[in-house]
Amino acid sequence: MQIHKGIKYTIFAEGNSVRKSDGVTEVTMPYYPERDASALAGEIDELTAWRILHDVAEQAQGSDTPVEPEHIMIDGAGFILNPFSRSLDAKFTAPEGYEAVWALGASVFYIFLGCHVFQGLGGKGETPTAPIPTLRRELPELSGLIAACLAYDPKRRPSLQRIVEVADYNLVRCGRNVMEFPPKKRNYETGISSDDLDYGWPEEMD
Image (cartoon, rainbow, N blue to C red; front, side, top):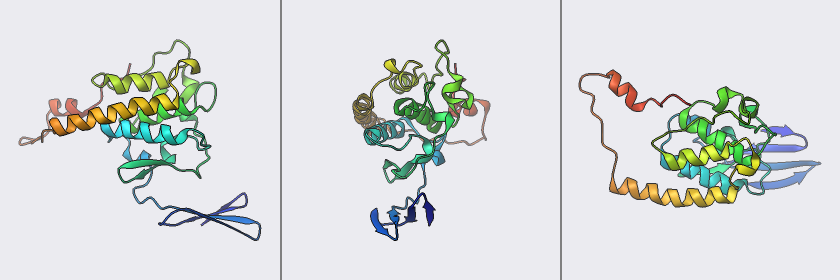
């Protein structure tokens, strides 16, 4: 149980409720046993990246919760933006200050690759002429959207609603590809070779 600025937070497995007593607002929050999305860093596939983009962009519209991996809770097959999180991490803050679209792009970049954009400096490490790192060249749709989210000029970034629409389309596309072309199982009979290491290691960022 935590008390902060007149609000007492209690973790509770069955959902949210709010009660006021003795001048303190008591809020019971749902418990997410799978933790937050930072636990997935470097381990997700394209389909999961689109699911994060869709769910978080949809919930971030009108939300006061800053978007960053530790505020994105894993909820079964989906993701929940924790409404009680308020902290700001500079690694997910745009050049002009906090902005949800830039933060979402930086968050998915980190969750997908396991490393931070702009050497972990966030928007402070970005300039008008700085090249935006490529997520994965073999995933042009996903890489293009993340690059657009990380644009230095806020006017060049997509809206949260546009992200929802693009993610929705690609969720259908990726789901269809998974059904038609299931991933092949890899069998290492003679140990891991240098080629095997190249198979799973992300290419060097631009």
